[in-house]
Length: 151
Length: 151
Image (cartoon, rainbow over the protein chains, first blue to last red):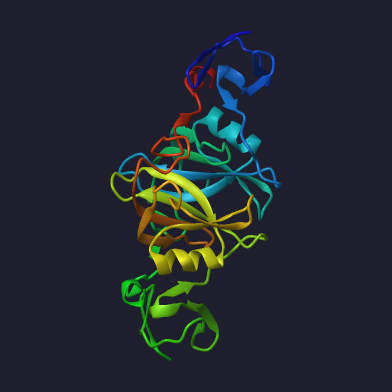
């Protein structure tokens, strides 16, 4: 097998063939290989085949948005270096910034302990992530003042 | 009506009665009122009645985890000042840190442009958010090195 396991990390050699499954000791499924040798670990997609992806600005660490990816849009994200989501309403790929220019350049992709959520750190181009013109989609706050008095 | 609308913010007076709906100009639904006068804006819950909540450490801005809330657990979160999720597997409320002591004290609750995702900034108590002992649930990375050569 053309891979090395180092702690939690798996490094694949570039000649690893596309789309093969990677197994460790013949029984523990690790993931699937992409073109160029990167590997997507085993992830849990929901009943619609989607996984939520939290997008965080690598400069300043603001959370910019939450999008949904399917297996194919995650592969596109990795292969192109730009975030690509799956639009549930339009049922199509949606590469962020394709029309607006507000692309997100992928710097790091993390996944959580349950393997059902992604955290993608990006360099946000243009004016921001939100279609409203705000830099982040999270620009409104739920008022919780007065909580202490009631409690 | 006992509320003031200031830009995007709605401030309710404390005598606002519990669980009433708040309408603006008699046709635009704004949200529902909780005990003590806080207001939950109109939010979109999925077909299971859930909304994803990104939990971010207010000290350092690390993303700690993603959990799911229903309307009732969000109300508990606001009223108690500690994050409370809805466990899909156990079908019960799950107040973070109840058994481990790793509570999350709520500092700010934001919601996104589509009103279908929450971002909750917390002070993380104890060793961290993750059941593995890691501070954040996002402690593993997808290896994307070599991407540039392949593109």
